Image (cartoon, rainbow, N blue to C red):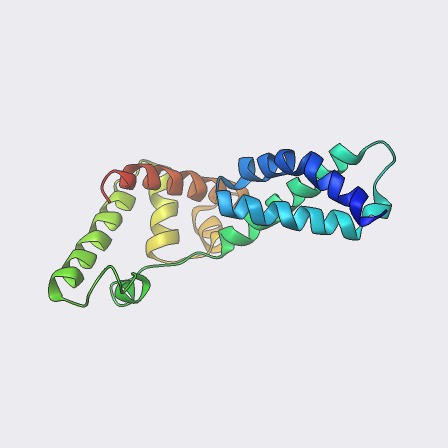
Length: 169
């Protein structure tokens, strides 16, 4: 396949592939990156594309790229503690004044309260995960729940927390 032919494939399917990626990650920049990765992978493996199945083949690559991204992003969590919250904040927006440090501690306290006020089953798993920093495996063992159930409860609890905290911050 020539570069011109592949350029035509990219121009034909780039919006579709972007949409597939965006529907998974809900982030414009990430969807753009995943779209690029999809076409790079497709270019590298164009010989393995089934005849007359280019569109579903590209969509499958995009879906797999997005799923892989979500799996890796889930494991890359950042935990905030009172000691390191100022390191995480943008130093251009916040100074190290005692007022801002007190505000940061208040914010952490507010988030902690929201986690503890979640309804079951999200309360226990989110407290263990976010505040006690236990792994999903540990929580699963402690609560005697399947790993996937705990994983889903943490995901849903996180979404509930984000929605509650959006208006406050």
